[in-house]
Length: 436
Image (cartoon, rainbow, N blue to C red; front, side, top):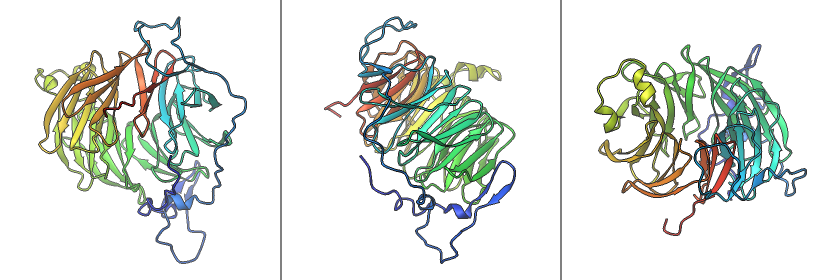
């Protein structure tokens, strides 16, 4: 458990009084209310210290048993077999699109689904803590704030809601354009989201002060806040990449044309210190970008795709695309997952393909285990797999879903994997191994 203050880590984060926000109807200039001398330690996290978040209640009332410890019978699907999971959360009535774990304790999950519902529940036994009610469309984004006191949910129509975890009360909501992605700031109660109109929105929660970053006239398909908390990288449907200054509100770098992608971006990732950015697209390329210079320093493409003849416009995106990517924290390695089921491990030092691991069906997402060279993948065949990136060897797999896995999350200590699926279930797998 991590209970220490995050304020020290946020010393370099720009104070929000220097950020210009606007509301629904008018421009709002956020100004310093205290005329005293500036404090160099002021930052986004300290800006919100006046918000009093109580400790999470020990006792929860009105719990519902939306969980089962045994495999369920009668689930529609073609992947019947053993169930390796420890807990199954079964309150959703349609496909479960997203999952996130609370970063402070890693004891709670929030899931959102096609049933227009989102739930916060406990990993140890699947007990429901509360429903994030009020959505009218599929909930595709959900996540906890950096200190686990708030949880945000967003649906496809662009309705975002934030709930205070300990009181289970809604504290903020906003209707933006059709939602593409959403992410909390790493050290402050600040929420970013990208929408289909090309805008990236930034809000202070719960007071709702707002700022927008206007992109091209096409969806902002993916985004990520850099570790310094001062910048964000956003990818767009037209293949462009923008690195935004969150303080000034302007793009520091814009990559387009041959520097950008030749198709919509699908995913972005950064390394631990934020010096490198990895972008993926339906053009099957993963580009390595220097966050400092905004220059492309490497382009990765799997050999099986590179050897194919050139396809007409639109054909390539249907046959394959980059679906997920990420950096290893202990070795200069990057992993790229493709829709055709290829997991490619690239050596960043030599910019060469180190291993190519094949799945039976398309990869949906990948995650690196912190502090090791183990990469996790989930795929359309409903299986979670663990790979040793040093050797390219499959370490183990975990089964239990009867439909495709749509999202998954990994606990900090790599003891649990939580998955969501088209079979209307979320599952908790215990993956801690003595030899790792």
